[in-house]
Structures are given as C-alpha cells and as structure tokens.
Image (cartoon, rainbow, N blue to C red):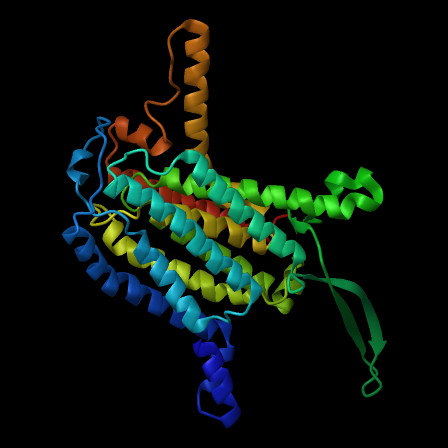
Length: 409
C-alpha cells in the first residue's frame, strides 16, 4: 500500500518518495517491520495464548526434557503469519502476480495448520486434522499455483532471441546488441549442468504437437508434489526448539539471493541464468519471511516460550516450495531443503522397514532409534541445542552449495 502511496507522491516531487521504487530499500524496511511485529507484538500474543491456556499437549516418548515442555503455548504460527502478511501488504507491489500467489500460499496453508492446531488444542484430539484433509488442502494449493502460472499472461520468461554486432557511427566501435522476447515456458533450472535449463517438454517430446499442453500438465503435477512434500517436511522437522525456524530463515535468505539475481536482467545475463520479469518483487516478500522467522526465533529458541504449531510449520514449508517454483529453482530443493528431505526420508524409511521386517520375520525392526531423524540423536543422548545448532550448520552448508550452483556447471 505504501508502495502505491509513494509512487503517487513522486509525481509531486516529494523528497524521498522515489526511494520506494528500489527493491533493496523496501526490502530493508520490510525486514525491520517484520522483526518489530514478531518480537514486540509477538510477546503480547504469547501472553494471550498463555492466558487462554492454549498449551502444547505432549506425548511421553521417553525423550530427555520432553515433559518440561508441557503447557508451552502453541499456535504461535499466527505470529509468523502476521509478520509476513502485514509488511508485505505495506511495502510490496500487491498487484504483482507472484506476490499475490505468495500471499495466497501463506494464508491458505496457515489456515489449514490453524484448523489442525485448533482441533488438537480445543477439541483435545491429539491426532488433529485428518491427514487426508491436509493432503486435499495441499493439492488444492498446488493446483492454484500451477494453473495460475500456466494461465496468467503476467507469468513469462524472457529469453535471448539473438545477439547482433553493430558498428557505431559516432566512434566506429562495435556494440553488442542483445534482443529479448517474453515467452510462456515450462523451463526450469537444473543444477550442476553447463546448459542448465531443463524443459518439461523434454519428458513428453514424443507427443509432437501435443507436447506443450501435456508439459504444462506435468508441470502442475510436479508443483503439487513439491508443495505437499516440502510443507510436510517442514512439519516433520518442527520437533525441536528453533529447528524449523532457524532452518527456514537460512533457506529464505538463499531464495532471496536467487530471486534478486533472477529478477535482474543484468545479473541474469551475466550469470547466464533464467530471467523472469517482475519476479524481483519477491525479494520484498522473502524479506518479510526472513524477518518473521528470525523474530520468532527470539521466543522459539531453546528453551522455547512458544511453539509455532502446524499453523507455522505448514505455511513455512509451503512458502519455500511455491517460492522456489515461481523462480524456477524447484530442482534445487533437494539440495537447499536437504534438512527437510532427510527428515522426511527418515520417517519413510523407518515406517517401511518396520512393516517389511514385521511381515517377513514377525517382529518389526527399526533403522533409527526414533524418527524423524532429530529424535534419533536425542535418543543417543545429544543435548537439544547441540542438535539444532548442528542441523543449522548443515543448513548453511547446503545454502552455500545452492548459491555456488550458479557458477559450478
């Protein structure tokens, strides 16, 4: 909203109004605003949750220090949602199609998580929202995102048509003239390859003239799978104080760098990466995301004064997934979100192996002492803060590797 206000004031030569045209300026203010909301107003929300006795119900899993968390306020994800949505509405171009999609993602998955937390807390049902309804919600969001990216005329990729050398008449020097064109494309970025653009059309090339339409269908299916997998991965990771929050902040900062580079024609051309017009506005949104997670970490770090619940974890995972898809970096998710991936895989492996050994030998066996993976290390006697810190160090390493893929091909 302030973006349009200062855009209007710039017409009257109001001093400083032009600063709001710079993404870097608005991103800085977005982070500051998000931090203020999540820290100052977050404290009041935590006090309200405590007064309403909205505390976490803890199942005794035999983990050290687990029962001391009983009664800690949950549903703190509303702090994250508020400190993302409000600064974005204030400082971003809210008519930008990509910003609209990110706001829908935040509210949509936040609402699903809120319903789940509400059932657990107020209905005293530890199972929460039935898994099938969560999946339906995640699939629904995937459809909205995928179909919007397919149908919206504002979603394009700008590609080089050719590069011509012209002789300047003034100083007889050669000038390289680059021509660009905007196209609807199913291309994405594939890491560690020199020609690092992968087109979903390659998967259905045998269909001839029908391949373009089918490629978009494949793309929508991929979007649904990624949104579901990453949001559930973030949900599973949310088992230790500050783990999901800190990891998400690292991932968000990395996505912000990728969005800024891919949304700037000069950097995109220099790095030979895909240029997506108007996607640079997403840097403002991800700044709110970073500010909200860091601000929430103020209260969520060990020992946690509040838990985000599914309200926060589902929305954080979904935001990361949709953001990566929009900037065409979804194939980097296994690297960047390696923590979420490993946590997901640890559960799948544990459950699958247990069922297999029980069916074959009559007694179920386990690969890990407990899943998700962070609980395995708890069972081995590692202090909770040490596990969180080491997971975050790994997260930073994965973030660096992700950035380095821009040059390593």
